[in-house]
Image (cartoon, rainbow, N blue to C red; front, top):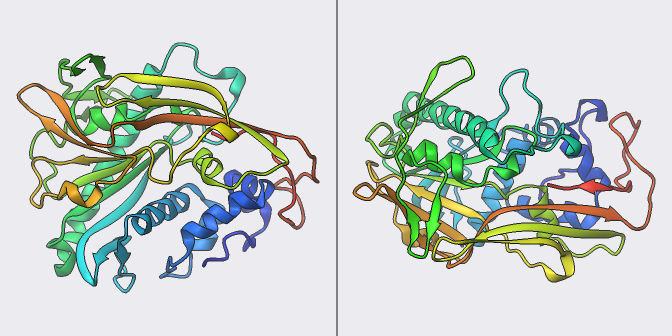
Length: 361
């Protein structure tokens, strides 16, 4: 188990999200420590990077925890990509984890002003997220061609790209819409009693500079080397809060949106933690590439809470298999009921006992 929370660098150099975990209940730190159980720090830099950059390490630990939950093993003797996934010693597929991050000079995801939360719906958020998601996929596809494809034991395995979004302050409102745009060229979905309603397919979007960003990269054979994309927009601090043990000093409420088997959506607001249940895999999506060189058997990821997607080119709609109910969006807020000494990034030495009061996201 990695020693994640003993600071390796001065707090002033630590990522704000890491500092926040030093202030949250021990039960939440225990969740991340559990995720790291069995994880091998192959280059000896993971803990420092986790403390200074946080989001990419957080996502990598979550992916690893999901693989364990699904009964897979990881061969850490292979240095790259991030995970060579095995069962009974047999390599099955490999995963490279990445995050869609904010644009240069844009507001960091953690720098969140709740009084300035978007009032005009999510379209502006989704538009920005689409560009950031497309950038992340394109960069890792290029890395695969330049690096991974040249490794004989990797080039013959299905390649899964695991992407999470930390691209803007209110990224958790994006849902899966940017992924559907980038991978299948499908705009924000309507639903009916029969499920998804076909809409005009998207081929491009534009950056603020006017540069063209191609969409629908799985609709055409543009990235056949990527077998599937693994995605979650709810693998956030609120996931940790939801699956952690109750803390008597912290009252938490959740705001949740789910999708039913017929494609309709339901929302639940201000649900107290005592009435809310969420599993590790809830909100995990796999988008299969119908044009892939190596198709990924859906049976390998058929677990409760996991949604898998393909694409019906005739009707122009996604094909969904998996759980009858999937978690689309979720956020939470906590109120401290018992005050403890507060910790800041400017503190000389953290003791892990300070309190947290406010949105968790």
